[in-house]
Length: 451
Image (cartoon, rainbow, N blue to C red; front, side, top):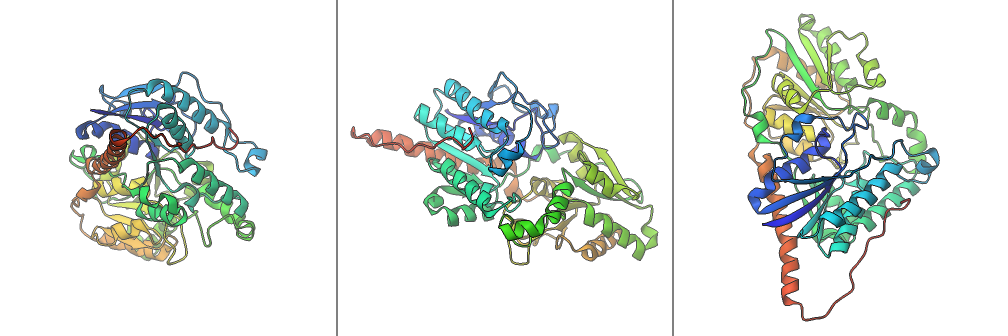
């Protein structure tokens, strides 16, 4: 059995969307001939993007070898000067250094290094460990780093710096895995030297999480459910600074992030009730996740909104499956501009089998959902379209669960990752077998600036 060394800061008992790629991979790779060894952190709760979910830890399994850093990360965000220079917070550089050091120590005997790039700079740790151990390495970016329109920068100069850092970090990777086809195409187009090494593999859903019968839905209530964090505060900030950012070139043209929140669906519910007063007291909008003050301000005065707070993954799945309608919002872009990411909840909404109201721009998510009868598609800021969809679904008879698309089952997705690992490790073995004594120079990746 081949050994794969994971560098993964996002790992149980940390929960949230960012943990599921790595958790699913280490859970299923044994079936494809790989024994995972994981280097991760102490799993302290830093902010709402990294909730603790102890139940996820039980899924790791005894066959997975886990090594945790012994010290806590330095606290605090990047200073104003660091942000102006385009630098990441100090904890990012600390993680790159410490995970690289531990990886070099525990990774002897591995066949390949796998860097789960959350944060993205983990790619530098992957390159460092691979060079030290003489191994190939794989970068799993999921989202497209400098090519992600959801990461607006203060100026064009900041964006250019981030792009150069991304290019340096990936220079020595034997393979680069993205979670969305559009993200993979962006990397191929802007970094042609990587084109033959880039693969899109969906994150998918864990089928075992959705085998239990759905919970009974309460009476005449029509339940709309949104799970996960929202981007109300960031969206409002970007709207305030939109003109400046557009002039300085740090933001994708036409980007609006406030739509990736509950702002517009709350308005849609109000319009649906105004058009059909019989819906008053019947519609509930459930927002599962840790809410910011900005999120809560949107909820004020709207008695149809329910805020169950931060739920564990098991409870989140149960809430999804109790929904009459699952709400999937994304950021807004001009028509014809394609989004470069697929929110993780997309896969779990599909697995839940419930009807979906997707307020999404052009891109992979719209392509995925358009053929499905249980999905209604509107533009991200189309409040009237959302209101019409809510009224139509509320007036219809309760729908049975739809069959989840089998191609997004986690085991199938991990099979694609295993195929990438096979290709990388087989190529190394072939080179070693055919080597005639000539030793060429190896490329090296520099550490991220600011380390």
